[in-house]
Amino acid sequence: CKRLQVAIDGPASAGKSTVAKLVAKKFNYVYCDTGAMYRAVTLEALNKDIDPRDDERVAEIARQIKIDFEPGKTEQRVFLDGKEVTHDIRLPKVAANVSAVAAIPAVREEMTKQQRKIAENGGIVMDGRDIGTTVLPQAPVKVFMVASAYERARRRYAENQAKGINTASLEELQKAIELRDKKDSTRKVSPLTQAPDAIKLDTTNMTIDEVVNEISKIIKKRQ
Ligand code: C5P
Image (cartoon, rainbow, N blue to C red; front, side, top):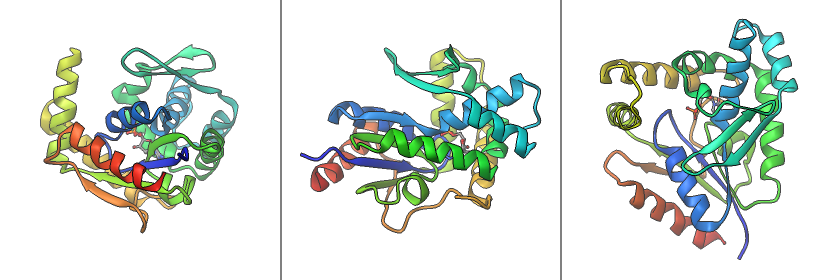
């Protein structure tokens, strides 16, 4: 059977990466977390004291840094110029600035180029905001995952607690999620939006297994 490109898009904390990882494992596909790439650019800008709104300097960083993924035991490991940043890219200061970095057209251009290269041979599950609309518009499988903002905040809160991370309150998490969605949906270049041919999955009342099974059915039909 054919090794397909699978695009999974949707708002922050909708469970895309959890599901994408499981789907990739099931079909023996590669998983690519494109949000991690924007986060790595953001982290490097912050580390170098560059203003995340300084388009030119941030774009230069996007073109210069080398981002690598490596499968880990429980999570995908992320490397920035050879140094592991798996955890640092999840820091609140990165989350708070990543939407500004991701709104810079030259940054998106560079990330899109790298993402297309990663996906060129198929057998890939890529999650993000603009995969079905911009990065892989020809992908035979496109899913747009949504869930209520409250449910997404609740999941993130539970996840943080399980990991022992000293987390913000549920209300604070929901506000931060809603703010990021708003910025991502209203930016000029490839905003977060459902591709016309994407299948929408509202996961508010679905278990992870149910979501994985739903997407697996779609993949099997197209293979
Ligand atoms: O998926 P994650 O929440 O880690 O993404 C972090 C941020 O990266 C998003 O809020 C968005 O601003 C940006 N992003 C993007 N396009 C993608 C993936 C992520 O603009 N394909």
